[in-house]
Length: 308
Image (cartoon, rainbow, N blue to C red; front, side, top):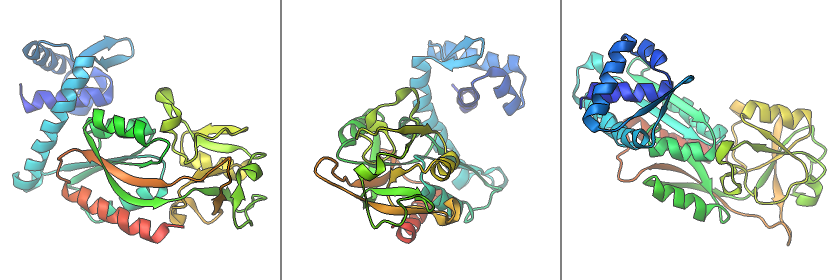
């Protein structure tokens, strides 16, 4: 088994196609296929299933790549520290729930490092995918929240993926609204006042479950719900339909603009408030890279400046 074979397998997994992977690697498809067949023969397992749409990881292949990514990540860290200067290129990726503060911290971090020697990625995605990305080392850091409602289930997923959660900040629920919303001038908003307006929620994909909801108080029964899968659409729905979402009260005006506001959610006996504990996840016992350390520092800075 060679590092080159591991790298080939990682690229195929990311591309989902032998043809696309060979183009990205600048090698012929027969050469790539031969390298993977040799690796599979040595391991005595099948890494990929060939389909009409491309390739998919087998169960054994997914398990192998979980460990292989760790090996290749360590190799890249060695290259960064000891390799030839012109050959160094460190990758850094973040997977996050749809938080503007996570993006702002990412932007600030990228500005600190030379793009020539780094390859950066940020993925706003579902809760399950955040956990999966960090679990397989596709991303070094994941950003999400815990609450009394989801903590037990999410913590179980952390254990299954060998992850650790690191606390950043705690906050109560806020109602995120367009400034032209009929409720935008109130000091606080009750659940009953929200009922006549659409509740906006991020889709959670095939793994969707209440405990995976990104919005605090997602376990409540909302009479009118609209799903979206990106922040830009969510902002448009908030303005166009007088929609609202329940959030942490932490936002970035630089990214979201000044046309939106956040108002404290007013709890009652039937609809209690809940605390969001926002934090980041990493693989257990992993040492943050230089870029990851800078990103964590930027998260703290941005959270201090953007909290409601």
